Image (cartoon, rainbow, N blue to C red; front, side, top):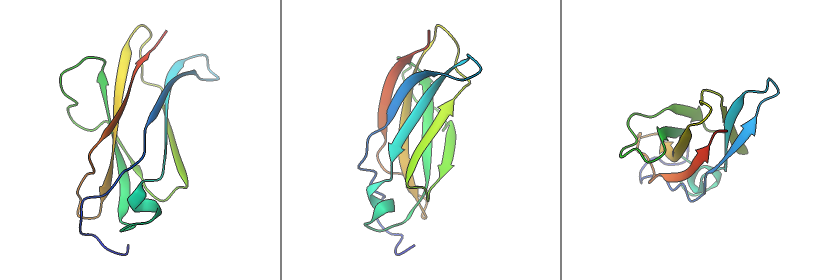
Length: 112
């Protein structure tokens, strides 16, 4: 880590898409590139925090998942979705202080 001072800059978008796993089960694939402050800047992003909520829910609640930093690109398949439901996701970068970037969101994703 080169520094650990200012809030991290995410600066990227989150893509959420409905997919079918090889098992035939539905899932949502989340994908995103490295944050601005992971690929450069302060170089202090240590993880990505993901939230999931039912589409239209008023709040995000507690984080759903954390993914360690250090990869060239990121993806995660959420296989704990239910057919007939709709989900929204949010993503933030977390630095070593641990401060979160402003989140970006994606969705709703409808599960057939």
